[in-house]
Image 1 (cartoon, rainbow, N blue to C red):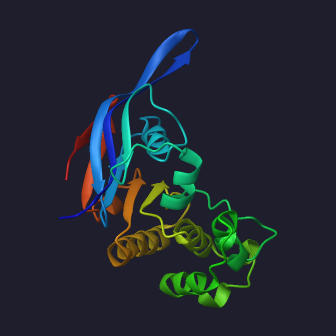
Image 2 (spheres, helix red, strand yellow):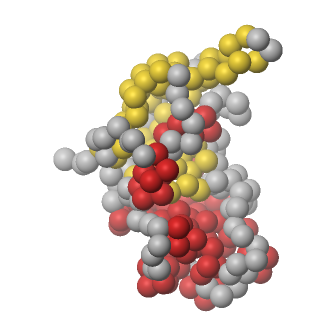
Length: 219
């Protein structure tokens, strides 16, 4: 039986706009197991990023409960650093640091040095020869692979990816998505991916649609 890595129970979220409340998420519940790749699709502005931010402990819900590996997170900063990896549409690499240094940043924060792990990830992602290169010397697809490696360096139980292929051409998007899926299966890491690309989402184990503040499973 697969271990539940993330569980959301009755999550609701509203924002105030011009004195009026606008509901973004309404009573959303779902769970994600170790090794699963789950995609959330929805129109721009439907709340996909908000849902990922709440799941990643970057934002608070108005109502509901979040469980990470079966527990309510108390020290959110520590849980984020140790158990959750983040991948965004833009790679957010530090331009003055090379590939190796960029990937190691999260482990430095933990006071650890994981160079052996970096090279293992770079080999898996097919960019080991770029270890000493700088972000400006990489293609878009290579930059996003570095961002994936950075998200994985602390061996998180959960990776949250917000439009991770949004800035890539179709060939690179397919390759990056396939890599994330392979890594999920080989490392038993759960991936929750927000995307507007249904073709990519179809490769996921499950697909949810976020529409009209509700989350519905469609695969």
